[in-house]
Length: 238
View 1 (tube, rainbow, N blue to C red):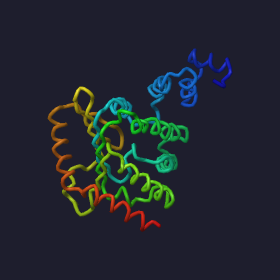
View 2: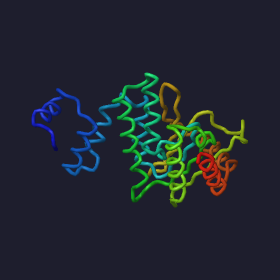
View 3: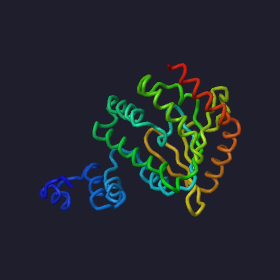
View 4: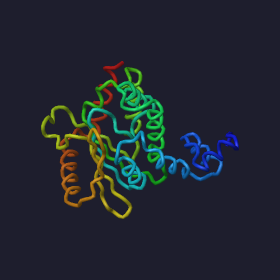
């Protein structure tokens, strides 16, 4: 693994905490396909919002994912530079440490493997127009992010729509939400406040979210019009 016997012994005896790099290397050496990384993730939750680890576990198992995002790109769609920009801003505000920022970015990269799976879930993302025009990370980062967004939109299992500013008060959600459909057809909802995340399991509440999401899909720009807007924003940046 490239680590000393002493360090491995300390970690085995809980005298030293493991790092994400240690977990990734263990998975590589023992060919355990992410098991050590998952154990490390469950152990090290300091950098994640309360309630988010539970959501991430459900996300990893989902067969369908519907998301609405305000202000910033959906996490699964963020480039490394874009995600790093958001994490570093949190460090500058004093919300998290640099180590925690690194953990957030590494964990996001781990989650994004979902998009590359042979049995990747069907994903429908509606993004508020502000996600496209907020210059996270600066001009070059946004150019790369918009290019990546366009590339994702070409994948057969991913649908991207933009909710334009003209929808105004008709946007049904005042915060980002996610709807996850699991293999047993159970549907969970997930939303975040500034302090914590919440996984919603109540049937009536989730059904109400689904109705609102269906209406949002109808009222947002079509796939073609959404792609045109993404390209127009990119052209303005150029």
